[in-house]
Image 1: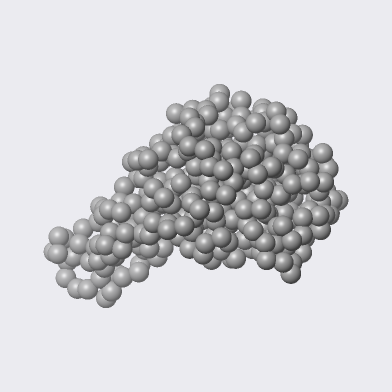
Image 2 (image 1 turned 30 degrees about the vertical axis):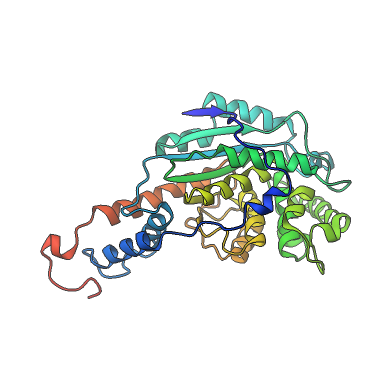
Length: 353
C-alpha cells in the first residue's frame, strides 16, 4: 500500500524544533526487563543468538510492552530537490527525483517490492520538488520557514499506532548535502565525508569535495564547523535539504510516540544526527539498519555509536537497506516470542550451560 502527501496536523516554527527535543520520553524499563528475563530462560545457551537477543529487548522497551510485535510497520520516504546540483555534484539530473516519485507511485521502485514483502505501509512525500533548495555554496539551502515547514511535514507524517517506523529519502544531490551536514556536525575534512553518491568518478568526487569545503568556508560559525560551536539546526538549514529536515522531524515524532525506528543509509543518518548533536541520547530509540556503500556512512555511524545490522554494500537510499533489516528484527521477535522456556520444554540445565 502506498500513499502520497500526509495531512498537516500542526505547524512548528523554527524555534519550536529545539523545544520539541526537551523532556524526551525514555524507554520502558519494565518491558525491557521482562524481555531480558524471558530471554535468559529460553531453550538455548545465554547469548547464543547474539544481537537478536538485545534487539528483542530494545524493541519491547521502546514499544512499552512485552512481548513486542511488528504488526504495523510504516515506511516513510521523503523526496526533495537540491540547488547544489547546478554545481555538477551528481551523475544524474535533478528531474530524476520527480521521475522516481512517479515510479514509487506506480509501484516500480525497489522500495515498493521490499515494503510489500515485509508487509509494511509505504508513504512517499514529495516536498516542493519544483522549487529546489538554494545552492548552499552561495546562501543557506533553506530559509527558517522552509526548514521548519519540511520538519513539520515529517513530524506529522508518523502514525500514532505504529510498532516500528522506517525512514528514507529520494533526492538527486542529497549525498552532497549529507556530506556537508556530517562535516558541519562532526568536523574533519570535506574529503572525510564525500563519496561517489549515484556513481561519480574520481574527478566528480573531487569536485563534490570542493563543493562541501566551500560550504564549510561560507557558513562557518553558523554551522559549527571546525573551531566553532554552532547550532545543529542551523547546519540542517544551511547545508541540508527538505527531505533531510523531514526525516529529522519524523524521527523526533517517533521518539515522542515511543516508536522504535530503523534508520536507512548515509543521508538518513546525517539528517537525524542533528537530533543527537542537540540532545545526546535523542536517537536511543533508533537502530542502524545497515551501513551504506557510501564511505562517509560508516564514519558517521561510528560517531553516533550505532552498529549496523547489515553490511551489504547497498547505497540506493529510498529506505531500502532499512527495509531489508526489518527482516532481522522480525527474526529477533519470532525467536524471542515463540521459543519455549526450559520449564515449558521440560529441558534440564541452565541457559548458559
